[in-house]
Image (cartoon, rainbow, N blue to C red; front, side, top):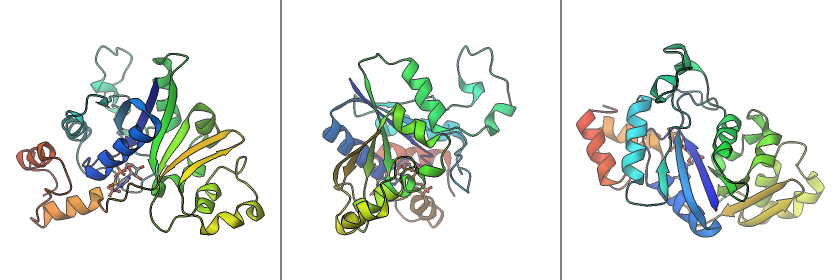
Length: 234
Ligand code: ATP
């Protein structure tokens, strides 16, 4: 089975995330997509506003309608992992979650014939070379990247870790080509989605809640209700 792994802060999860997952599912025939809220994001300067529990709850609500979308506890802080006697309380919460560890953890539960694909937006992908063990990420899984207008194939190739990055003279002709289609280089398989173009960000949603503006068009109804009920982001 083709399996998608989609990590994010999901603070809150929104229709842009769901659109990415749906487009990825269609393009690469994903039988399941794991949405993994991260406890401590290592790549973001700002830490999440809502607690892990709230973000996980919203991810569960947002994915409920789609059978193959699953909210995952893979990056849950230790105290939330049921029956995990080894997890220490308190200190665990501040340890950053590295994607390479999550990928390896998930792969332990997959079958040999399963194919793992990592879902990501191009904004996040452009920093991928700075992630932990960047080269291993590409040997462990394929990538599905949601592009945006203004990003070219050369931008995508240029973001790869040095080992995989084609020489500038090779990618020069790509500079005017929009980031779409498949990019298969030695040791790297990238699938580019150019049809996910929702102008939504969690930051904008949090700002809207604070300013008492409606958020209906950004999030599923269940998530909107949850934010209201729990008084998040006010
Ligand atoms: P924030 O505004 O708090 O930075 P965000 O909306 O970017 O949050 P994240 O949880 O940080 O959401 O994003 C998780 C993943 O989803 C990242 O790979 C990001 O690039 C991607 N993503 C976020 N928003 C969109 C969107 N509107 N369309 C497609 N992909 C998105």
